[in-house]
Image 1 (tube, rainbow, N blue to C red):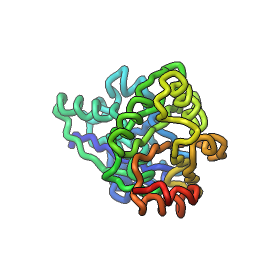
Image 2 (cartoon, rainbow, N blue to C red; image 1 turned 180 degrees about the horizontal axis):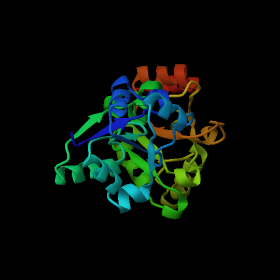
Image 3 (cartoon, rainbow, N blue to C red; image 1 turned 90 degrees about the vertical axis):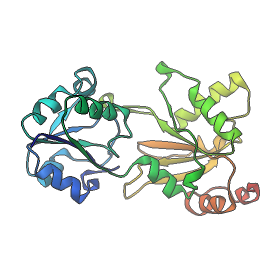
Image 4 (cartoon, helix red, strand yellow; image 1 turned 180 degrees about the vertical axis):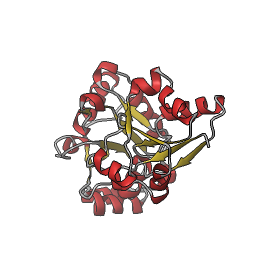
Amino acid sequence: MCELVFVGLGLNDEKGITLQGLEEAQTATAVFIELYTSLLPDFSLKNLENLVGKPIQTLSRHNLEDENGKALFDAAEKGKVAFLVPGDPFIATTHVTLRVEAAKRKVPTRVVHGASIISAIIGVSGLHNYKFGKTVTIPFPENFSETPYNVIAQNKQLGIHTLCLLDLKAAEKQFMTISQALTLLKGIEEKKKQGIVTDDTLAVGLARAGSNQPTLKADFVGELQKFDFGQPPMTLIFPGKLHFSEAEALVAFAGAPQKLRSMTR
C-alpha cells in the first residue's frame, strides 16, 4: 500500500517516539528522518535504527524544500514510508507543504503526533495555555527583523503571553541562546523606546525541554540575561498579565523573584 506517515519524535532523544510511531516505522517499507528543524540534545540515530530494526535515511533541507520531498514520494510510490520529524510533525511549516504535495500526488497520509515545545514550555512553566497569543521566531542577526518585538508588543497590549522560538541552523550547529535573543530585542527597544523589552521586563527561559535535566528560569530581563541556561535548544516567553496562580507557579517552578506575587491582578 502506498502511504506516507508523518511521525513525531518528541523533544530530546530516540525514546521520545511513541509506541504507535515506533510501530509505524517498524512496518514501513522505507524510513526517513530530518534533523534540521530542531535539536534533539540526546538523540542517537544508531539507537533509533536499532529500535526500528532497519536503516534510516537522513534528508536535508535541500531534499525536502528545494526538491519538494522527491525522495519521500519516490519511495511512497513503492510502499509505506515513515517520515520521522523532531517534535510534532506539523509545527514546522515545511512539513505542511509536504503533506499538501502528497495530496496533489494522491498519496495517502497519516500523522502520529509527538511532544512539541509549544505544549511543553507552557506546561512546565505553569502559565495558562489559553492566555497565549501569537507565537514568533527570533531570527539570527543576518536575518534581522523587528517582527518579534512588534508581536510581543501587540500581545502585551492584550495582556497575553508571547512564546518566542529561537532561531537555529542545525547543519552548522548554531543555536540561538536566550541571552542572544534578549540582546537583539533590547537593541530594537533602544530604537523604538516603547518599554516592551527592558531590563525590568519579566521573561521566562527554558532550555532542553523534554530532557532529564531541563533548565527553567523566570526573572527580569536584566538578570535573566546573565543566567546560565547551559546547552541548547532554548525557548523564551514574555508573560502578559499574570493570574495569581501563574505567579505562584513561576516562583515555585522557575525560581521567579518573590515580588512577582504582588504584581498579579
